[in-house]
Length: 391
Ligand code: ADP
Ligand code: MG
Image 1 (spheres, rainbow, N blue to C red):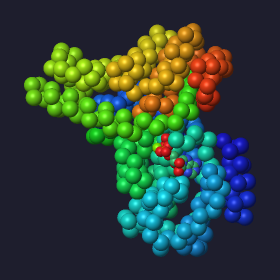
Image 2: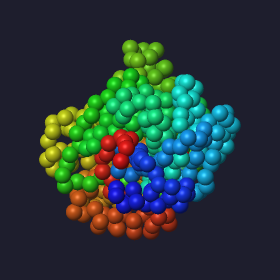
Image 3: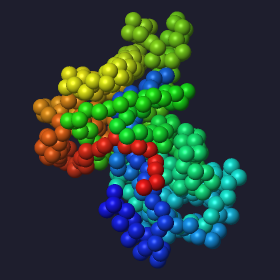
Image 4: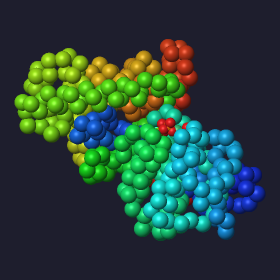
């Protein structure tokens, strides 16, 4: 962290010709399990990671915001009195922070002049939610002008940023990303009902295991349209089942109802939803036993593999690259489990790996992945971290 702080100081000085006053960090996030069931009444199980976006800031007496990011190293100087909606339809990265500040302005808040420098070690556009990280980071920095850290309602902050992403950025995401980045807790997964926003922290503490993230670096061109298709298929399945059974959401369906769906596609989608929901419940049970044994870890790993194969075969949202990572991981003895994470069709996978073997694992998978896909994967170990904070 000290290394990063001195880097931020150096960059800030170079950009603004002065020393920064305060430093902040917003993590990226990974979903451990519970994929594609949040919109079917199920729960997700995300966590915040130790990679994310950093900000160095300094207040001044102007009526301006100055924004700079390592992404393009350009300084954008914007007057608070301007209507930020003009940035809505641009492709500039500043639309994320400006969307957040506009939403706070709409609530009647007024702010001091400020210079911000953003720097990140989180891959962009890879499904680790750099967009939610920059939103939450900005919201936190600006809320701290009007409240103390303990007064900030982190859930309300997550909701505000989700609305910005939906309305200002135009991405119809759910609340999981912003929630995990605002509410992350060191060494804990967050079991979250994305509709009621009820949540529970589950301690994940296996001393000899590492969580490894493997970024396929595959462009996620299909993700948006296929995501919408799956949502439609689930909605249709629920409507068909509700004609005969008293269920409110698709996770309440049971296997004996599958025959009523007639279409093989709808049966497969529903199979995934039912089984993924069960896996989340099993993992919750295993983690609440507070038992860090190898047996428990092995069971958790097995559930990760099952989740992957269900997403591949039944939900059909995996892709060749993600399958290569999971299948090759399964051949390695030091791996307990692996799965794709996020919406699919690219993005990242995660693996649970024996800590002493992580370096071996990384070199083996990198090599295999390159051989089989002709792409370079980015592979790194992550820690489960707290949500947004001042550093
Ligand atoms: P992700 O899966 O990472 O959330 P998105 O496409 O939703 O991918 O968001 C990526 C966008 O967020 C980038 O194109 C950029 O506009 C913005 N962004 C992410 N990280 C940074 C950063 N460090 N500095 C400036 N903008 C960033
Ligand atoms: Mg995003």
